[in-house]
Length: 313
Image (cartoon, rainbow, N blue to C red):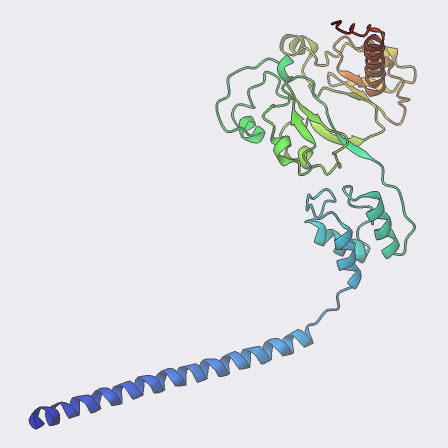
C-alpha cells in the first residue's frame, strides 16, 4: 500500500502544477482584457467629449408631434429625418401632409412661425377601366401589380390601365383604399391622408395625389388612338374633342389622344364631363348632387309608404 502511494505522488504533483499554470493563465488573460476594456472605454469617453454635437431639443419635440407613420410623404426618410430638417429650416413645418391640424399648428409655434394651412389633398384614380377594360391574357402569378407588369405589361389590353391586383391597398398605412367589384381601387376620403404610398407603388401611375378642391378630372390615362380605345375599354378617352369644344374658358384640350385640363383656367363648371360620351371626365359635385337627390327620393318614398295595419285579435 505504501509503495502505491509513493509511486503516484509525482503524478499528482505534476497535475497540480499544470492546473496552477492554467489558472494563472486564465487570470492573466482576464486582467489583460479588463485593462484593454478600460483603455478603450477611456478613449470612447474622450471621443464623445471631443466630437460632441449639441442636439436642438426642438427636434425631439417636433418628432413627438409627427404621426410616426414613416410613410415618406414628406419626401424624407421618416419622421425623425423630417423633424431634423424642419428644425434646421430645410423643410417647411407643414412638410408632413399626414399631420393633424392641431399638431401642425404646434410645430409652427415651436418654430416661432405663424401657422399656415396646408392645402388638403386626396388620392384619386385616373383610370376607369377595371372590369370594363378587356384582358389580353390570363395572369397566373404573384398578386402584385409591379410583378404583373413585368410579365408582358400586365393582363390588361390597355398598357396604361390599372392592373387591378391591389398593391395600393396593401401599401396604404391608413387602410384608406379597398378594391371594388368593378376591379378598381376606391379611396375612402375620410381616411386618406395624401401620404402618397399608393401613388409611389402603382406601376402604371393611375392613382395620383391631387388637391381635394379639384372636383373635375380626367379618369383615364390612355394615349392610344380612339379606335383602339373603343375596342378594349368602355370608359377610356377616345380623343373626340367634344369636351374641348364645350369648355367656355378654353381650359381643356386633347393632347396625345388624351383630354388634359388646365386648372389655372378651369372654373370647374363640369360642362366637359356632361358632354363626354365615354364618361371618363369626372364631375364630383354633379355625382354628389345626384346621390343626394337619390337619397332624398328614397327617404320620401319610405315616408309615404303606409304603415302596416296592426293585427286584430
